Length: 154
Image 1 (cartoon, rainbow, N blue to C red):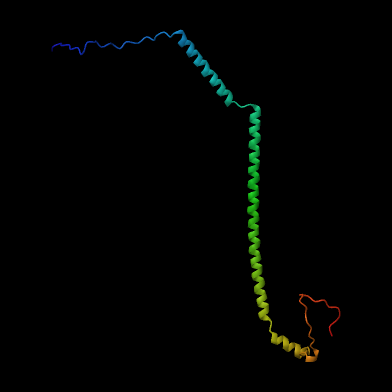
Image 2: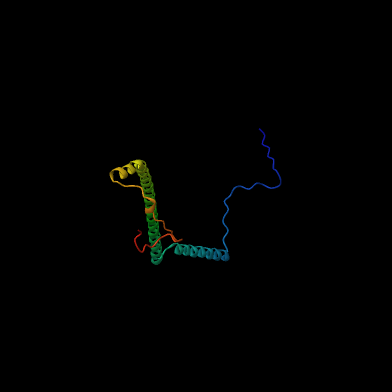
């Protein structure tokens, strides 16, 4: 084997050597200290802003209690409205049933009345007769829908 070394270009490659940090100048040190102090001040301000005082906590507690009571009152009112609507629906249903029963009983009563039987009983058993022409009295009614009676009609 032949040891032929071939160099590419006119520079030699450098070895990986650790680079020593350069010393910072006084201005860079002061600048970094100012940045650090600003960061610390900003962190302290953020912590103060995140902290809550007793008055703020009590204010938030009162707000939460008011919202909770308002929500409970709203739910209670909605429950009352729902209950009343259900009661109204039940009463309307009951009213419809009563009207249907009333109409049915009225029709039953009207169909059960026999006018011929009533006339026969009145004429034969009670001795009633039809009125004669001289017993009929005619009178006129004014335009009003009621009449004042000052004495008995003969």
